[in-house]
Length: 121
Image (tube, rainbow, N blue to C red; front, side):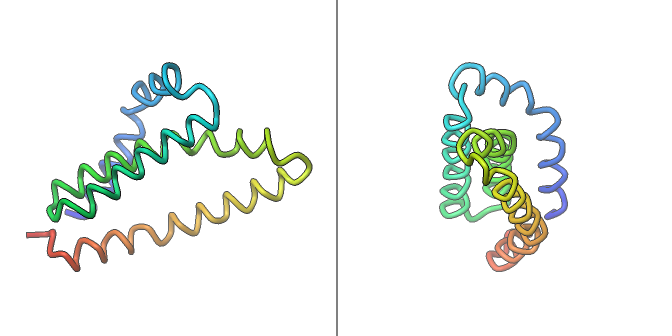
């Protein structure tokens, strides 16, 4: 069941492009606005995880977090390039490294959360 969440993440990144394009075109035109929209989606995902103790709640949280991820991934390098000046290459490298470390540990953290709350019933 847990593996399905990551399959959903991958499929949603592919099929959710029209939605994120619409958000960028209508509500989040700048990199700052895209990062803010991403934070809203991530915040909603955390609220769902805290309040819904069920597998459907985890699915909804994964959908919301994936949309947050889709909005922030292209916005952050653009923001860094616009605001970091000469430090942009270091800052971008640091950001990419931290994202990769998070990507390595995220499946373990989500799995622990789901196992500890008995969401596989």
